Every structure is written in C-alpha cells, then in structure tokens.
Length: 455
Image (cartoon, rainbow, N blue to C red; front, side, top):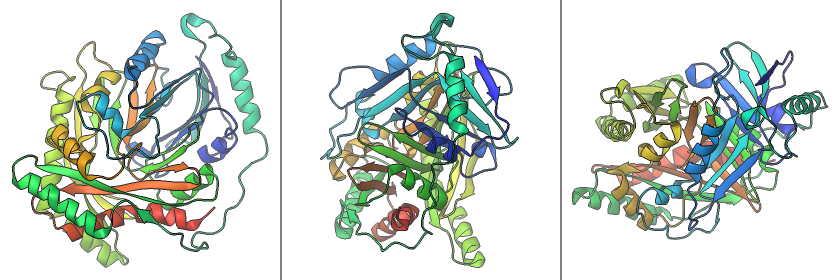
C-alpha cells in the first residue's frame, strides 16, 4: 500500500467535482461533523472491476464481492481511516428478493440495478477530527498490477495533478430562489391513509407487529446530478452522505442512519432509527417536540421492536452471547427532524465476514417491519412502485475486513431529468393514519427543499 499525506487538501465535495469525468465516482461524505459517525469522508473513482445485477439475474453478487475481498485481504495500516481500498456501492431494497422468497414489486418503472459495486484500488480519505487527509493506493493481487491498470504510484500522481487544478465548482443560486416545481406522488393522500389502515388490519389479525410503509415522490430536476448532491448536503447535513454515478442514473443520499459496520477485529455495530418528530420553529417548540418524542410510548415500542429484530439478525453470524444493546432509544437531532436511535453491537464468529453479516441482516429491520419477511410481503402488495436504492444500503467494504454501510433513507435517484425519492414510517396497531401521512411529509421536507432550491 502506498500512502501520501495531503498538505492542503480540498474539501471532499471539491475533490469529487474534479473526478466526475472518471468512471463510477463515489463519495462517502460526513457532512454532519462531530461525533463518532461524522469523523471520516472518502472519495474514489475508476474501479478495477465492477459488478451490477438486475432482478432475474442468477449471479451471486455478494459471493463475487467476498471473493474479491478475500483475494486482496491485507492488514490495516495503523493511524489511517478504515476504508483502505476495497469495494464500494449499493444494494437496492429489492436485492432482498435474492435472500428471501418475496413477491415482485407492483411496478419497477426505473429499472435500476438491484446491486451495484466497484472494486477500487485507490481512495482519498479525510479525518475531520484531526484535519488530516491522505491518498492511498494499492497494487493488484500478489503484489502485481492488474491487467490494464495504472501502477499505484501513477494513480497517486494523477490524483495529485487533478487536485491541483482550478476548481470546476460554480456558485449556485441561493436556496429558495427557484419557483416550486410540481411534485408527484405514487399515492394520493386518501390512498396512503387507506394503506395505513390495511397495515393496521394485518397487525390486528396477528400477521405482523409493524410494517414500514412508504410513498415515492418525484419532481423535475434540470441541473446536473452533482449539483443536486451539493444542494442536498447543504440542506440535510448527515453523517452518511453519499454520491455515486451509475450508467444512466445517479444517487444522492443524506442518510442519518448507520446500517452495519464491522471493524478489522470483527466488532459489529448497527444503529436503528425509529421514532420521528419535526424540528420546532422556536427553541421552546423544538424542546417540546423532543420531550414529546422521548416520552412517547408508541415510538419507544417501535424502536424496541426493531432492536429485538436486529439482535436476532446479528445473532445469526455473531458469537453466542456477544450481542448487546449499549444504547436504547436515545434522542438524535438533525436539521429537519428529531429521531430515537439505539445501538446494537456484537462480534463476528470466527470465519464469518462482512458479506456474511450483510446476508444475515439485509434489508435493515428499521425500514421493513417485524416479522421482517411477512412485513416485506405485505408492503410489496401495498406500495405502488419498487423502492430501488431507497431502503437498501450504501457503503464500502475494505480489503482489511472492515465495513461501514448506511440505511439508504433521505436518498434521491436522478434519472432522465427527474428526481425520485421516498419517505415512510413504521405502522403499528395504534397508528393514526393522518399522523403517519404527515410523518412522511416531515421526512421528505429536506429533500423537497433541495429540489426547490434548483441548480
């Protein structure tokens, strides 16, 4: 591994703008700084290999990823951020159909890959706590160059050259200067209320305890996908912001929620979010809404239910007795909403890897329901369109064995001049349909604001 410290590094978003002409650029940016989740950002592009799959393919993409990581496994370099080259991309929500017997969605109009990954042999990394940044690059397997790839040294020189050029970023108009575009939803308000009631009836009949019902919005977007990402990260600072460019589509995410992380020693963590209130317009109102969320028996019950589901998922691949809940229902405040967040941790069994953990726990319980498979069956019959990247996971798997992934909420897919995004909430027996509908609007508010800001 070659490592070079950067004396005067550009910001992650500035650096990304200089690499957009390369294939498959991907940025993982902690735009909400501070705390354990906001420490690192990463940027890479031009993968040595790429994998993607679509519904109906027979390939086992996670097996391919695991094979790559095993073939290139290296010990971590001490003192550097944990993503030290490896695999990065996303699993879409419908990838869950490859792991469980589930019905197809009612419609899949965007026809996105259900999984999309690249094998990246170089990465820029920022440690926002120390203010340091590095470029890391590795040669191919067995210490040799992979066919047709630049050497690690050549790659680092090219990245340094690109970082020293003039900035390609232009100043965008101030937020709020664009006329409000027309937004469309796959649900009418009445249809969403009826779907909530249908979920309640399934719960009352004993089929499930909870299901996370969502609706998809879309609106025109005339700017570039990266301009949209800049707007989204400005309006919605998040510890798990991400931007990636695929073939004919782009994804921008401002997720506040960690799905699964693994360190090189096999320690596992997941941080489910359940329970939401909007932020108040005054400090007094904001404190009242936060206290209301913390004292809500309904929201706490939702969170605890998903914690139990995730404890079960982690137990499939973690050492017996190692799964714990160090934090339960803590308040986490973000620019547009308050959330309740818990932490579930464990240690992988000997011989288990990050891809085994993904198989055991995907998709995340916080955005499906409980029991997970039955909830997903019900949602497939109620939601009018496929979720796509939304409620899947975005993240990286390092050649050191480490991994970090987010739940792909607050996530927008840009395709053919339109921006598509979902918002949802957990439905339980005592849910009030009108309040559940309003919760989806509260969660969508920051994404709408980014779209309304315009390019």
